[in-house]
Image (tube, rainbow, N blue to C red; front, side, top):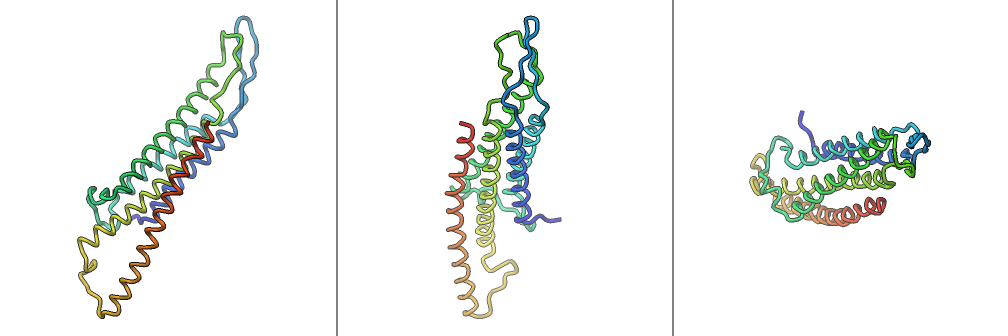
Length: 228
């Protein structure tokens, strides 16, 4: 079964949104600290039962799936038509946003793993010989900041898909300027009408592309603000 561009976009967005939601829940469920119980020469930390670690690793998994599908969506041969990589990355904008999407995905996954592993170590190592320990948990804001990065990564992958669609359209038009079946329009009127419609849609697509690009560039800021 062939996969359409819309289906791929919805799938990437869905996994990115799930990663974001699970990261936010993990941040809200994480206890601020444990309860220290002083014993003979040791302190035993008692932590409330919470699903933070499981939610954190699930968030990493969903982000990884979203990123893998995002990369795949760029090179996927929609409608059975493959496009060379040099044609896809002919535009500097595509190269830049593809790199940003990869970087944000790696950063988000790294922060989620850091927070999840740190929380797991704190919960598993409950006995401390330092009598002044405060029974800490993972740093506050890590899960939340990583969750916003996961959402931003999904947004950047959607932009990459839009740019990929434009690159594919340009390449296929150059390969077959008369259309898929080599047909030409019957009258000059129809030709002029279609050309005008293409110009309008192309102008709207260009405006939309750069508007979303500016928005996406600003969207990454909440993740860092949440953490810091």
